Figure (spheres, rainbow, N blue to C red):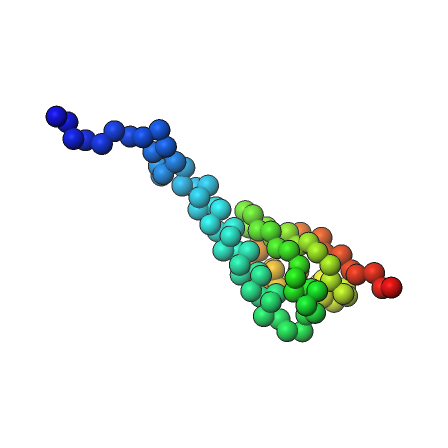
Amino acid sequence: MDQRRQPSARSHLHSPANNSGLVSSANSFFNSLLVRKAIVDDKSLSMTAQNCKVIAKDGAATLTGVVKTTDERDQIASLASSSGAATVVNQLEIAKEN
């Protein structure tokens, strides 16, 4: 009896040809962690600013949420860029004063 294993219907998911998507996804996740860490470690930023959302994909970091000042908005974009994001899409909004 032939004991060789037959490829399963899902074996193509782990083929080298399809690993580029997995690697890209892992790189995006790692980049978002680097940007997030840089933001959280910057104690000059308000808690509001530190809670902004970072979405990294294909080398670009998109920043969303609310910050208190334009200085915080600019600082977060700078941190994202210096953390390895090739492109920064800054969609951070300045909080409205009451």
